[in-house]
Image 1 (cartoon, helix red, strand yellow):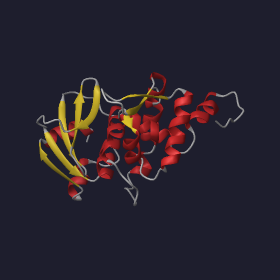
Image 2 (cartoon, rainbow, N blue to C red):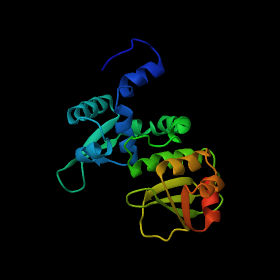
Image 3 (cartoon, rainbow, N blue to C red):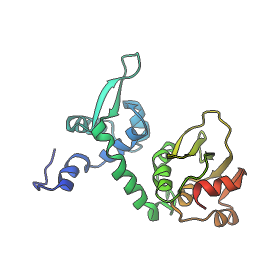
Length: 208
């Protein structure tokens, strides 16, 4: 592990998570524990030997741990309780990134599961939930459910429950709505989004 040689909390934090890919490995594990192959799939562009190095370094630092997955002998990676505390700074970085995210993918890879971290981070900061509601999100790949509850927002795979509304849009438009950088009226007028079901629920959930 490289050292900055500075007695500073930021410097020592960056010694652990500042290397390229480290925080993205943490992002994947904040979504949920994952096997090595799942991490390769969820981190497009990373070399297998580099991922192995990053996992080893993060494990040695106490950020993540290896454990047996279920009853089988397969190994999965999971954050330690200390590593899970990175959720707050990572969510802050996601909110900070809003101005560059609303430009769109611009050829970058995208995985729908990344919204599981981004949308609650953006919505919790600006929308007060007044009624429980579920919005189905069709953004490419299997649909996701965005649930608004009294304790905040959560997102996960479609579990078969009826949704109050379905939103069809590309990821940049959904992120723009969640960040408050795009209004629902503008998105509808410009044909950027389609809504089936209760539009009032979509407005309440996205604060739009």
